[in-house]
Amino acid sequence: MTAALEPIVGRYVSFDIAGKTCRVYFEEAGSGIPLVCLHTAGADSRQYRHMMCDADITSRYRVIAFDLPWHGKSYPPEGWQDEEYRLSTELYVETILAFCDALALDRPALIGCSIGGRIVLQLAHLHGERFRALIGVEAADFQEPWYDIAWLHRGDVHGGEVCAALVSGLVAPQSPAVHRHETLWQYMQGGPGVFRGDLYFYRVDGDLRGRLDGIRTDRCPLYLLTGEYDFSCTPEDTLRTAAGIPGAQVTVMRELGHFPMSENPRQFRGYVLPVLDAIARR
Image 1 (tube, rainbow, N blue to C red):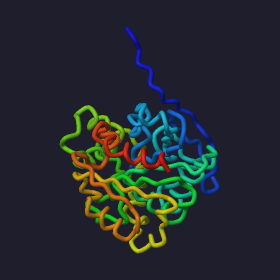
Image 2 (cartoon, helix red, strand yellow; image 1 turned 135 degrees about the horizontal axis):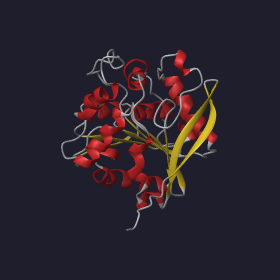
Image 3 (cartoon, rainbow, N blue to C red; image 1 turned 180 degrees about the vertical axis):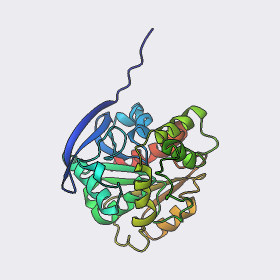
């Protein structure tokens, strides 16, 4: 019997975020251009495992996916038991930049999905010079909320199962069952209150309408990829956002929903590979 050993290596790195030392878990595979990957709200870096096992990507890119503090295998900062987790725009940006600095990454490319796609827009606006290129997956400057987050952290409901149920409809119907349920399993494992804390950024603090002027896509290309079945960040949301950013390149992805890299990795690679090809050519 032969074991299949994946090329992914996991490690911890400790660095300061907002004045607190955080022990952050990340996984990586491949070599070449650094490609930092940001997971969705309430999930973790496992969403990018298929990209890290794709030789067409890792032959040219050092793919690096990390768990935000409070998520996955990353720990909350000391004293977490005395505070409520809330992700703000400022904290999110500081976390990403501090992680890149901790690994001494020189102008990496970056891809983020959902909340990660939203923060990509802020990075393009304020810190485009820090990145080789930015890829926003399911990204828009604002979406009308379609959910109530007030009851996501309660003692009389199973938080993980509720979170998975909430997002299950965002997976495209064409996505293979094995990948659909793998994606939902990650949501079932989130820490108490973490999904709600992420959605504070997505719903309350991260409204970027009218705040994205001055993005220089000639210096840092911006690619926006949105699944046609995503009703949280609809293609119309992304197209509306891109209309205000000269040079932003938009693709609406067929047969994909809100979690393309994990819900249907084979379909997604058909869209992300041309983008990565274009970045590598630069």
